[in-house]
Image (cartoon, rainbow, N blue to C red; front, side, top):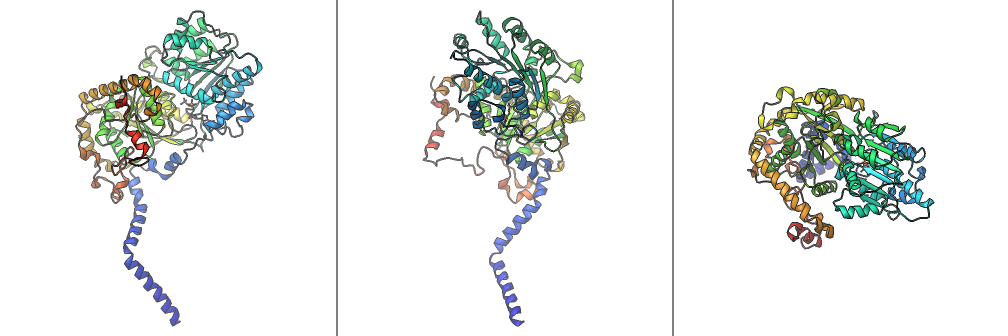
Length: 625
Ligand SMILES: Nc1ncnc2c1ncn2[C@@H]1O[C@H](COP(=O)(O)OP(=O)(O)OP(=O)(O)O)[C@@H](O)[C@H]1O
């Protein structure tokens, strides 16, 4: 008995000894446990967004796969009897199964030869749904004929040059193993009339264009006929209508294209409106209408939140969200007009938060390059101006005619395949539920998860602070109601964003300080500077980049655009402003997506490495006129 007591006593002595000498280690361990337990206090600021489940859903799912709702797991691409070259290209893209809209559309097109009108969710793979059957049919025709001559078999119309480029890039990927058999022409590339005409004369199998460009090709090219045309596609069809392309489409159907000779038609969009009915009558014969938009209860990859707020408080919210790194991953912020975009960029710049601007004023090459770099994760924060001013059908009194809204309706982001966006943040609420669908559809694409967060201005608060006020925000509450109804129909629910407002007040004076420094003159200067910079980038360097594509990667669009009065102190968040739990470990707090927190830049290959040397070359300086 005595022996046992002495052994237990010795063990206690041993533990006490370890505890004494390693108390630093123990206190560190205890501190970590306490921090872990107390972290909800910090997360409580915005619990719903930062909840671990959301975080995991957004970030662990980076491989290409399609959501259960979209995917047709019972079907494989092989079972659709596609050409091996096409299957190989699809495998190379990493697609395992077709999505529902793809299965339906491929079968209806290839087997039933039906015209197809498809309304399917954003990011559900509508582009491949028409591209795959078109290529398949061209390859089948080629096999059946001994002639190696080329014939234009398909015309694809899209509303913007951006989308034209996106679709032709995608077609290029699909035709990588059959590029000799299927030639493509993106007619919206700036090629010059003569070159374009001669390329059209070579009868590429597929022509991608905007309606107006195609009309101008016909006008410059007398006697042009597409006698072998088999497919006619209008992608983002409701946008094509609202851009005022109706006259062009009328000319195409009445004067230039013989649609009655068995041309198969595809019309695709995530939203269809009554204007599309007229087009349906003009172009289609007994079309199959696919409506694949509803989402089942158990699989919602898009979670939608909103916050009711005042106009100035939007700036406070965004500052806290970004500075405290409350949303992980890439964020796409939408504002409603150009000046707002620059105001926000300059405002964030004051806090050391770098962002990139995407708007219709920038030259096309810059816009394409910005999207490309955002997709390659070069930028984490993109401020897109969505000038869409369309009204919902419910708002009939104020409904504008399609033509008059042509310019105002321009949105640089619609239909664009932004990759891996973790959050769409509606800094300004759109003016219609349709625009909302397209905006939030930039996240949770192709089976990935994502969240949307919308700032909704309280009607009582509107107009109280002139400098931060925005005309469209006056109707935010009304629009929100319509959005909610539309989303409920689709099976989604909009949840209020719960957080402790008192915590935000600590940051208020900093926000006001920074906001005051952004004058109208500063915004004007920033806007001019950016356009100037981007024009140089876009035009002068175009040829240079064609010859030296690797230089393109080193060109950034998120540089500071103006010297607003900027206080170095604003860039750091002092300890006392942080939630208590976060004070212990301030290095984890702060939105530092572009630079490392210690201020040192990441250098791949070391200081003397080749990579580093390459990166130092600024193509703007290297380039000579
Ligand atoms: N079968 C598939 N498997 C995996 N990923 C796919 C599949 N089909 C398409 N994708 C991917 O899904 C993404 C969205 O596709 P796409 O742009 O065609 O969607 P969409 O329905 O046209 O969207 P929007 O309405 O916003 O234009 C793309 O990145 C594409 O590569």
